[in-house]
Length: 136
Image (tube, rainbow, N blue to C red):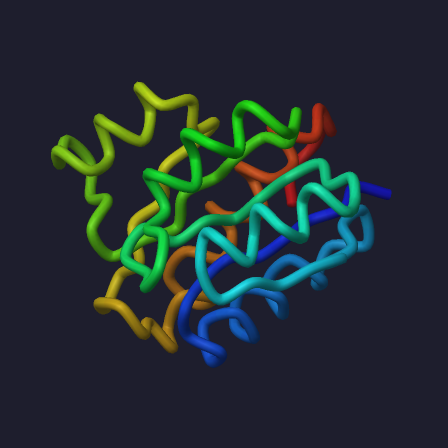
């Protein structure tokens, strides 16, 4: 089973993303964090295969966390953020810093429609990151 950590400053978004990921029996959400600092602490303490990472967070944003994460973990990072639309400076920088995929939230910082509008895309990116074949 592939282990997943969800990093987003919104408790609601962490729950929405967890529901999306746990709909696939190949994935297990093993951790949640509200900012980059907390995520790095948790990643140092446990192995994780995939990190779903927001960008705009307090204390340490997602881009800074991504820079540090690459040094302490082999986890693949999928950015899920309202500031990371295709071609945006944030999306380009996230890819340059090593993000496996970048998926924009469809309705702003708290996108309650994320599952409906981007759930399949998130699961597909997770399956590719995990090296799993077939569709979600």
